[in-house]
Structures are given as structure tokens and as C-alpha cells.
Image 1 (spheres, rainbow, N blue to C red):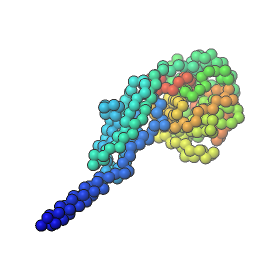
Image 2 (image 1 turned 180 degrees about the vertical axis):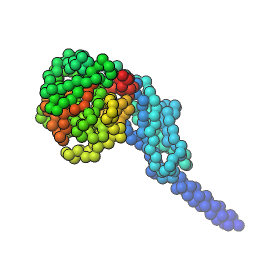
Image 3 (image 1 turned 90 degrees about the vertical axis):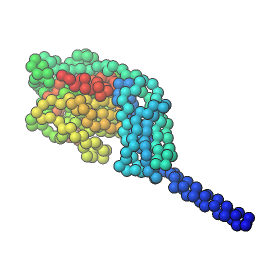
Image 4 (image 1 turned 135 degrees about the horizontal axis):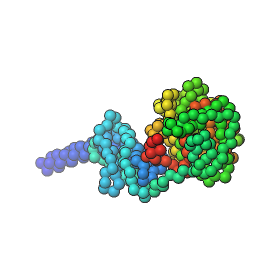
Length: 348
């Protein structure tokens, strides 16, 4: 009898162990993982709306993806179209300046958790400083901020400005443009913003260079242009050139990004390019049209001329022509404008 009882107990223990092991295997989730997708792009100040892209992965199934700072939950998601892989942008809002220690957390349906801690630096906002401004009022073409004098090439004309009556704007003409000597300015750096108003001519070509700061040789500087259905910028970096805006493939093989905000043939567009050490952003009429990662810093070597109304004399790539539309209030800031700054300067 004792042997039988011992055998029964042995079998029971084995069954319980098998059940426990089976449960453990069922709940095991070796692929449970949390990732931050946009960490390389962190470049926020305390006036920015901060966003973090998290990715959660689970074989057994996702229950929640969260982002926390200390014990405070900054955002969470609990509903998933794909129960095994999900990506979310958590719009955190404005954060105070300083180093923020955040935690991304993924939980599966069995309550198992994977977490990833990361730092998010937020710098102090600095009010943008206007370093270059040509308003063209009273047919004035000189820089009224930095006092750079314009050299007139060809026969540019003038028309009514974006502010209407009693204001004037530059109107492009074939082989006509303005140039400014920027060889000694101190605002050519890793943070810069360029703003202007543009009104397309009725019979414009498909490609027009509007503003250019480009080297006489090599791929250095910045050129902004209108192309078919929108605006684009060609940026020369220490590792070659890159683009922000436009479409398809460049003749040199580099990729461009399409933005779906076409220029207005019947009115004025406000165009802003902002540059930071990691990001290019192109705004059209106060709205972010497209953004590109900037993997290398802008190369300003041998960039000594600013041109308005053309890429000439230095930018001669891809058959971009002299702009025949109207240009008004060309401004350059020595900092990266925030979305709020852009909306403010878009107001006429």
C-alpha cells in the first residue's frame, strides 16, 4: 500500500511539474521588446511639442505600450490592430528645459514586461534673431537688418507686395537677380531658418531657383527652389548633398521626399526652411509640409554669395531657371524656428 501511495504521489508531482512547465512555456515571450524609433532625431526646446515614437513587439500578444517619466504616465496605448507589433507616436506636449529620464514599457497579455530607459534632452528656447531682411518696400533691395548691399544683375522689376497697397515686392525677370556678399557674416552655422513669400508667375517654368547660398565649386550651402507642384531645398553637407521636399529621384541618384502641399498659382505662399544639427523642416503657409533627417552638418566652405531670384551665379544644377515670380520679405534667422515661430511670422 505504501508503495502504491508513493507511486501515486510521484505521478501527481510529475503531472504538476508538467503543468507548471507547460504554463511557463505558454507564457514565455523571448521576443518581447521595446524600441524608440526616433531617438536620433531628438532636438527639442521647451517651446516645442515633444513627440516620441515607440515600438512594441510580442509573440504572445500586446496588452499595453506606455511611456513614463518616473511614476508619471506620459502616454499609453491599449488597442492594437496588430497584436504582435505596434508603433505609436506619443505626443507628450511641452517639457521644461533639462534632461528628462524616460521609460518606454511594453506589456504582453501574460503580464510580462520589457522596458527601455532613455534620456530626452530639452534645451532652453532662444528667441530667434533676425540677421537678414529685405522687404522690397519702396523698391528697396538692400538688407535692412545686416546692412548688406545688393548687386543688381539684369533688369529685375517690382510689383505690389504681399501686404497689398503701399507695399512692393521683387518680380523676377529672365536672367535677372540680386546678389549679396556674405563672405564675412557670422550666421552661417548648424542652426538657421530662411523665410520668404513667393507668388508664382502665370507662365512660370517648371523649375525655378528662388534663393541660393551655394559655393562656386562643390556641393556646399543651401538653395531653395520651386519645382512643378511644390517647393524643395538642396543642402550641401560635409558628406555630399541632401534634399528637403520635391519628388522622385534626383539626377545624381539621391532621394527626395514628396510633399502634398502644392504652390498657389493665384496667390502668395509663405515658405520657411528650418535647419538644426539633425533635422530639416519645410513649412508651407504655416504648416509643416515635409521633414528630412540631416545626418551630416551643412558645409559652408566657399559659400560667399547669397542670390535672390536665381541660383546664379553659383547654383547651376538640374536646369533650375531664374525665378519669374514675385518674392517678398526675405528673412534669415540665426536659429532654428519652432512651429510656433513659423506660424507667427506667417501672419501678415
